[in-house]
Image (cartoon, rainbow, N blue to C red; front, side, top):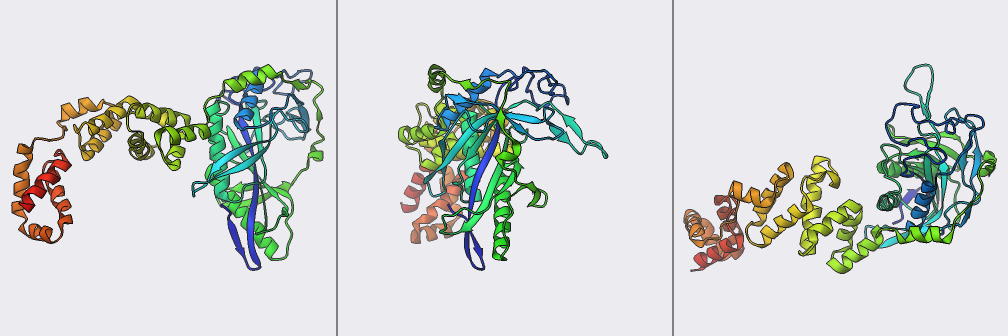
Length: 484
């Protein structure tokens, strides 16, 4: 799914790799017992370690290690039995130690891959270079006071997984597909909640361009801290077009770090791009190298849930769903679980259609997620049963669904209390059929020339019965009367 940029001197393509910072789901920070709860009062969740107090020693949170290994296994990546925490040295007010504890030469997780779904139904593998653990910095607040910057250290020391991709992404759409798939896997695994609004998932995009057909990489620029899927796509496209304009004019690309201005939709220069040697990495003397036992990794591997790719393949194989429908349903674990409960013992394709079309449509209009759905899976399943048992017509089923979504009531109760049961008694329908035919002689003549007009008659009868008549029975009665 290449994204070609037309230039005066030829076509260009994007080369992009993403560095995703995913906050580990853990009650405590990476090297201290301070809380990680979101939304606390500023500087209320800061231990002496997080504040960089002299003499305070970090202690590794074993659960964060387990979460990172779980993520690596979910990305089909190599788990390195030996890894080292190092100090990444730089100075900024929200980094009280003057260094960040991270991993560089010996990361916890090595090479893996992630499959993204392309619009034409194919998949593409995006390589994973590495995953390493590191502590987050604090937060600088520039907009609280007019003449000074405030520092909140609540995030200082929070465990982050930095997941670095290979430069395999060739379009803004592929970048978004990668982010969505990665977020889905993290949420399935329970290692990151993926909440970009709260800063749990952030992305740095490394973007360069090259002539279509070239194998050489261009000079890359890094766009820092992009915090939404939509902005990821916009930032990459803008930056690629900016670079093409410079190269087309005979200029050169300066390797630098840039920020995305979401209000203006542009990237702007932040600073020259640092290299690893600028940070003077060296092993943290307060932390021994990390060595994992095979049994530790094996236990985590055995506890992995069925992940999106495997679940999608099973839905296609067992339920006969299309790759598109299966992909939509497995994007979120809660959605997949909901669908499986609705489909149990029923026509899976029909269940998928109701979940994807009616339920997702209603949730989107209401601005709700599947966890907030007012209709429980067994209730939607019973509605489908009532439709298949001819208790409800298709139109009535949709009316009942709308009431269920508003009230959360069971479909049987709605049908009985509101008199919405489908009419299947021919003696009740025949007089209405007769009246519609008698009132529309012109349409009767048109029907004799074009039998497809019978649909118009069916519509009139359904309107007269307020959608309660059985449509198949109505059509049969009309056909018999019109041709008699």
